[in-house]
Length: 347
Image (cartoon, rainbow, N blue to C red):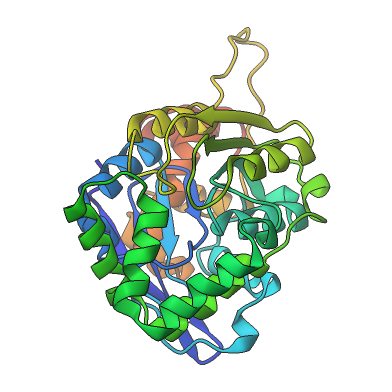
């Protein structure tokens, strides 16, 4: 269970992007979806079940884009571009001093994940794309998208119910009503419409051949929001990608058959088990410069808080680095990790 949680704020152009850090382990980052609310999201049982299943053993990092959720609600036209989406993701990773992460990009968040992976291949460990698309203009006919946008702007109550029908498929009426209410709490009508326009405008076709972290592309066959064929196009255009078709019509992975999506994502994200090696041939261990600094402090017997004070970091950041060091060294405790590091000449 991903019970341990922190909410923080990233300064961004005189505004603040809210982000949540939940759990322990290697970092798993979920680029922002269309509309989210990092606090209210977690109140959904299906949402908790999905992320508990997918992100167990990871540090899950989610954020609300500017204009929605717990982030500052002011959104500008200059925010609504793919470049700005990537810049926000990059700024967040830099703020947290994360050199390399796994990404799970869902729906419109898949576009930011693809563009980031193409621009910074050295920073992406693993990549999972769910309900993804290469070109937002292909999601629906122009007349359909125009009608949806008009409904959202004209009457957010009716517009939120229309979107709930598109996103959730065959959910029961109570769930439709809960999600419609959630949308209205997470964003204003004008912001929701502006962000929907961005969804329909995003185009990552030129980035797809540049992605090196051969992703798992997961897509439900009868997805009502993003057609199945678009997920197939994504997988066909990225070198080494694996396409994983699933049954179902709900766009959000935390609705419908949640477990099948969890299994597909976990299989792609699960760390590769090290092969057995002779004792005289140790597995090479690559620690970042920051990890070496923290390791040296740990070897001196400093606690996470003491290391944080000395290196001017947050205790959570230190804790996450220590967890990564233990994982890389294959040791379950800090003491054992320090001993192994000394044996390997890393201290």
